[in-house]
Length: 235
Length: 115
View 1 (cartoon, helix red, strand yellow):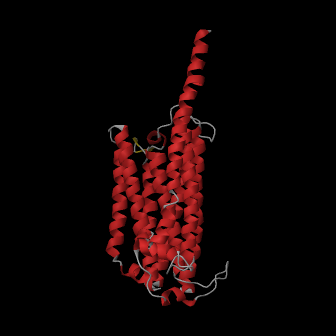
View 2 (tube, one colour; view 1 turned 60 degrees about the vertical axis):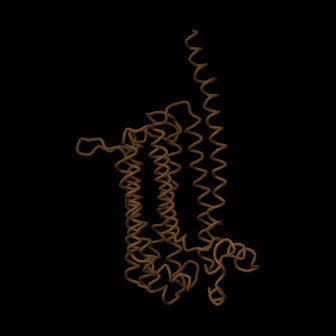
View 3 (spheres, rainbow over the protein chains, first blue to last red; view 1 turned 120 degrees about the vertical axis):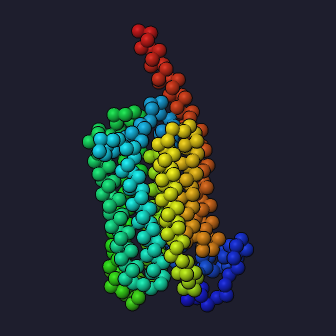
């Protein structure tokens, strides 16, 4: 960070991109190394989820059996009325809200507002945990309805396999994110990021950039849900 | 940390604005899904709302609009390969479905009817 700050501001736009890549130095100017590494991880994860969704598309296109109607499968009966996709809609709003609190946590982190930042991170973790809990509830309902990775009562057998794989992999990401958020909450509240206290796992000194890097991961988890929500539940 | 100062100065209001729009777009895609309009139109609208939401999250929440073009292109260009895979798997999927219709579904029925 120190050496990039001391240099003259690199040119913006396409010229800047060419000069960045041809500079024979660090390519990602002014971004440290943690943030580009998280972006690189996200890029690899984009491919994993992308390939899962492509696999789902192939399976759904290739089967001659009718695909189960998600609006009916994921409907909940409330007060005697069947509301389609109710649980999924609530889950979507919870995850979007958690993304909002995380964005605010990053903002207050850069203002060095330790208390507000920490509380927002905790709120994000709580919302994420609620999301995972609701997903467990959804899985329970479906499993009791007789959905298995190899069969289901409504139509094409591939439905269960793609459903459990894609939502399960996403839920795992949320769970890992919640654990990381709780860990970061403790670091922020203890003042580790102000004091540069070495972390317990890697021994790297605490920096405020860590909140933004964790935020990137969390927003990515929300981003994946946007695609799953559209392709799996609405299409 | 000079490049991060502009993040901190982005007013709180614009975060709430993006947050609100994410809610609105989600509600829109839900309404489109349950309303009785042609399925093709549903799919187009749902995909449009999805891309709008993804764009808002990446540009503002993930701070991509403040990043240098070298980082933005590193993230956004390679997934273009997925669009190529989408085309290939799409064509293949339709073909496999037609083959299954011909050799499994129809043949099965014609055999059982023949007996």
